[in-house]
Picture 1 (cartoon, rainbow, N blue to C red):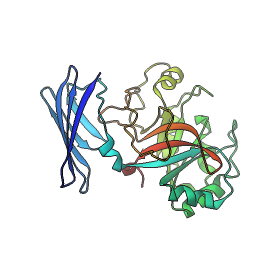
Picture 2: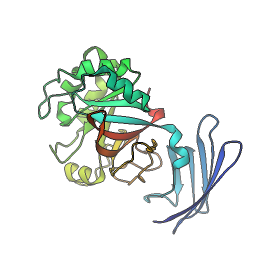
Picture 3: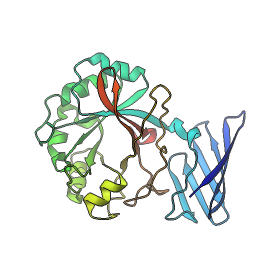
Picture 4: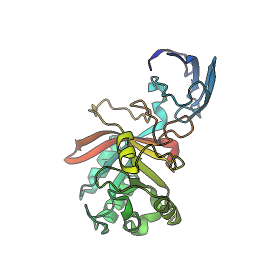
Length: 275
């Protein structure tokens, strides 16, 4: 599906965007940057409304991926690093914050096991002291319990725990995992992409679309010009996510960027999702 965009900026910090979507119709979007980043769309055969990163739709766009330039919406997204590496230098986290990073997501178990990682709490402490928010994950989603316990005294400061659905190790997520994370007082989210999700879950399983999605769709990013934007790249619908009512809350945008000697992945997260 192709989209033609034209954007006009007004001096009152409003934007008007007109998107012609092939086979769908013409949408007009007005966004006020004053406070809420609210957006409203209208079309001949469908309507969309909501905020700049969570848009609800009815009618013509159901089941279709509507592509449009979302550069003016990036103000509601924040930059995030995720990493499984040991980081001993507290100043590294300060440097990350000064570079515009606001969320740090770390692996919580010894790699390839469900044993609590001894470096989890020290690194969480350093990240929080630098002003970063913190999320957690384990590569094997069945390790969720020990992964959360590894946070120790910082458990209640976790923004979320990500249940990682990848082809390696290929462990499907279950409702018991989701409910177990919730029962421990941590918000569950799911990390995956369209290919891994269908491969591991055995098809386009939509039964977890109530759980927020941390999506992944990576490419090469120029760190010096990188702007946080959870709608870039254009969301792809799968698993019941990335619709107007189930838009992803995070997107992994680049693997293995070296920041001050440490390999990290670059992500954008919805600022309104973080507490």
